[in-house]
Length: 277
Image (cartoon, rainbow, N blue to C red; front, side):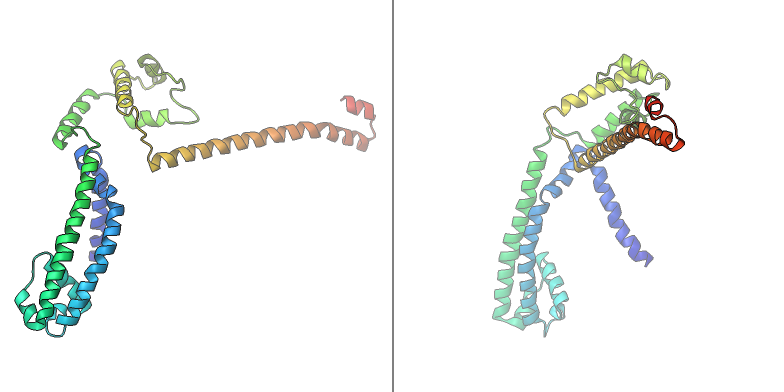
């Protein structure tokens, strides 16, 4: 059981590597190729599976009685895949099946190997070309490592960026509520944390560079959409709570004279005095 759990866990680790590959543009091209070709690959494998299992079933019928490799449907499918990869013995198949062996082998190689596999290659190549066209001279992984080393040297002594992001995204008490951000206003907002001028200048410069880079792009992922929806939901609940509190206050103000009048009637006091009070 432990071996089986570790077997599936290795694929979970593989998915985490795929997520990490997005940090580099050149590695991300491979991930985007697979993602963009996913729908086409599903339709392709539907056709491929149908044709492949028809051939493996017919091979089991013809060769299964005399060849161990085709003795069951599962073994026949595995042998057909091995034939697709170049591992086959045509002479043994001809001895068992005769003319049907020639017909089956030539049809399998022509339809599955030459046509379907090249069609699969065409789908991958087309998706790769489309994914690569989105990047103009993407940075290499060693160039990115060198850039990260320079960034670490430049940001030495700066405030933690995740802390700054959390402080900026605080809806109730944002660290910098003003819409216009300058180096001076940024240092004033984080005066308690003793933000340096170099740190403030770095944040403003990088924000401007990011804005210019993303200008004209619609970079809204599903995660961003969910985050925005959750923010709208929180604000809606706050408005509803405030509205309910205001209504309760209005009802209380409207009910107070009536309660005073009822109290006066109950105690036998003068109604005019109770109304004036």
